[in-house]
Length: 507
Image 1: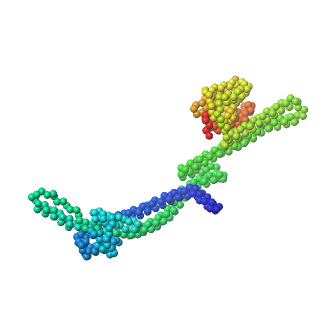
Image 2: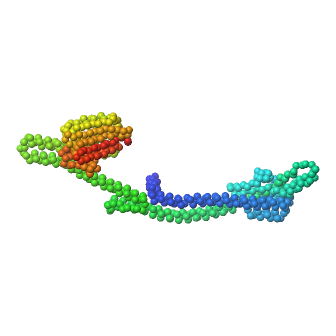
Image 3: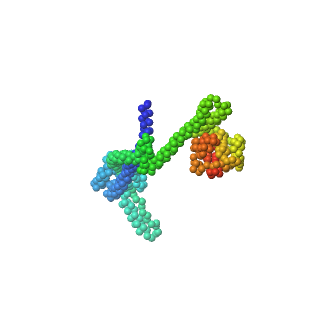
């Protein structure tokens, strides 16, 4: 059982090969038309040959029928000329000739076995009515032709008699004489064999089969070479990618043979560049995480060592150092919590807890919670709602995202500044705009602010206490909702973040 399964799997793998598929397509494209043409030509040959044979026989039998009346063969079958013609016709077409008189009696049979017998058939009866017939029996391979034997002398006599009657009765008016119907004196029936046609067909079929085999061998060789040549650029692509994978080359060598190979190389180069960026980002992230986690620990170590070195340090110094240590612990804890939140956001399989949320109430609750921080910074919070908005969102994740935006706007603001939150919606999306009168962001930094641990002003950020993960968390939460976030800023004047999210969750 197992060898059969392995054989089946190997067959599937072979059929998945592009080289094999190209080979099969070209090979079949060359062979199938020749097979179709062979059968079509042979069948057409038989039909055409039978049609020609039928016409020849009909012409010959018509001539023979005329001779039969000329030599009065129906009254006397001893005519040597007619018998010779009958034998010659029978031999020429490998057939059998029957002559039937008006009594449906066979007066001549070239086979000599049915003379004197009565023969009644549909074709013979129709022929006595003046209808010729020609039938081909494809099963038994013969053609049967019938033609009436017309005695023209009877027809001519009838015409003469009518003329004499008209002369004798010139004194009185009589109808004009009409031409009499032809007198059918008998039927000439001939059965012609088509074995020679079938034999010729078989000979042609054998020769065509031999020719097809030769063509198949030639096509096989040509297609084998052609498929190998056609697939070679793809092998070069695979080798070039493998070289990069093994470290033998820094970039993939271009393969311009086909447009497809160029597209593959371009796509791989883009993926490789993206992977390099991700790898650099990962290394930078690890370095930043190590640095960010180590910094509070270093500060706590310095503070603790300072206390240990001072045996008789006053209680006030202890309290001051312990307060600093507690602050560093809080900072460490915040970094760890933000990292955990970011990891959860990065999981593409993370399920969102979607519910219908009143966005107006959500933003009002966020502003209420952040008001003490704003008051401490002497920053005014302004909320403007254009309309009531309900949307299908994960309330926890978007609350974290909006909180980060508003909190950053407060922290990086000026004395007696302001933060304006504007809510609006259309029939598809709702928009939250967070604008501030803060210190702003340099234009060259706008594309990097969503990177983990990135800070525009590291010294100022250290004083404020940020971890550098807030905007990364915010962006991930918005992207999980199939939304978008854009930033516009003028350094020294302020920053505006615009978030656009679908009203209905798109899975």
